[in-house]
Image (cartoon, rainbow, N blue to C red; front, side, top):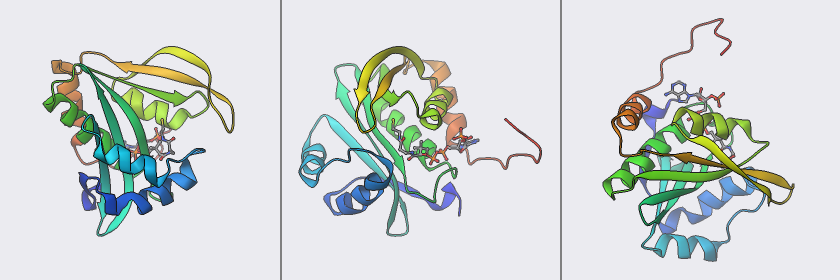
Length: 175
Ligand SMILES: CC(C)(COP(=O)(O)OP(=O)(O)OC[C@H]1O[C@@H](n2cnc3c(N)ncnc32)[C@H](O)[C@@H]1OP(=O)(O)O)[C@@H](O)C(=O)NCCC(=O)NCCS
């Protein structure tokens, strides 16, 4: 299975249970059904799901704040990591942000979570500060990351590149 088999759509209330099943595994403090209903109803929010057939295999969302977007969630179903699902979701999320006139994007990520930091780094997000003890269960600092010039040519080129289907990694590549 590759990301080519996955389609990305706006999240709907019918997806809440499946999304929560993923979040219960990957997040320490998953959102409640009530929070999800508010998120899906909020005019300043956008949530996307990655679907493989009828199965939700990932989701990502953002909050519009003036000219910025705040990426609030990115999660891939356990067992489906490394297929490019989160990459595909973020590409679509940032394209939608651009369509709405956003000029920068920001997010927080656990200091201990290197994998999402690498993912965001590939999109051009850079560390801009630390919120001490921002996360609980377990306690961890939050790294604040920013992607400036979201509406610039470099980001447009990078989004086109990341939207391409992944190429197999050559044997022996230890990067
Ligand atoms: C972090 C997380 C979202 C990544 O999801 P994913 O679907 O596995 O991400 P992708 O497949 O798009 O990218 C992961 C890997 O595939 C590779 N990859 C993906 N797309 C690629 C592409 N187009 N070209 C080359 N490689 C690619 C990357 O090298 C990456 O490897 P790395 O993680 O070792 O750096 C997922 O592990 C997860 O849900 N974690 C728990 C929740 C979480 O921490 N969310 C972030 C909250 S801030």
